[in-house]
Length: 279
Ligand SMILES: [Zn+2]
Image (tube, rainbow, N blue to C red; front, top):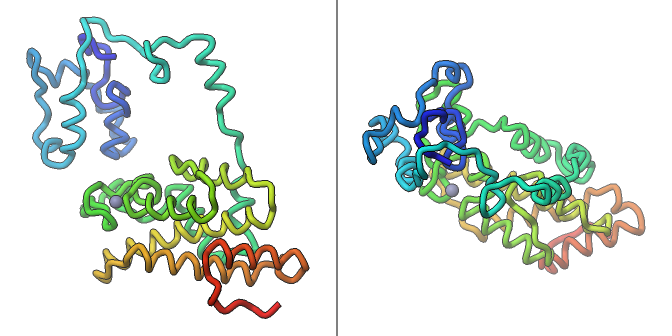
């Protein structure tokens, strides 16, 4: 909590939700030279923010302007409690709710899913996609806008999880599978998939999630490089097609239990007229 701000590093400390170095994707090599404290950017009760920030990060500026200055004392607060104190109870709840580490490789790399699709998910999880924020870190001067909504910078979580387009697709999956996937992160999505008891249903849902990520990337590239704006319905059709094909090529299809996989895929995705392998 900001008081005088003298003990708060303007760039590196988390004083208004997230450190500026992360929000602005500042390369780590520059961290050691960022020594300014908060008062360096205040004059009386006003903020004096560098012009380049006004130009390139208007949303961050808005957030900074809304920051409340409380008294003269800088104070560390625990964000997850109302009064900011870290009680024993809050610590216990935090530890107990900590997500179980999943072996995500097991989900991503599967015989049901084409390696090219799994590879996209793997790259997203390791933040290796050639998106604007990653390219900027490598020094490429590049537009910084999401091609799917044109109203937000293209960051990893935004593009694949929170963008209007992506959210609509995750909502569609929730609706189709009567589930509520927590799309706050990729890990939480797969953790929710993993909770399903039925092995075949779980396989279909994971395949569908991986195909959704791949489709989001495809739609983004189509718009950016080909100028083609795919509609939500076209994206859904693509996910349905890829998921049903995965169902047909599943090793499980060769066994009696494979019927569940393909039937489930077909029924859940509403594809009664789709051509399926004649089992
Ligand atoms: Zn977007």
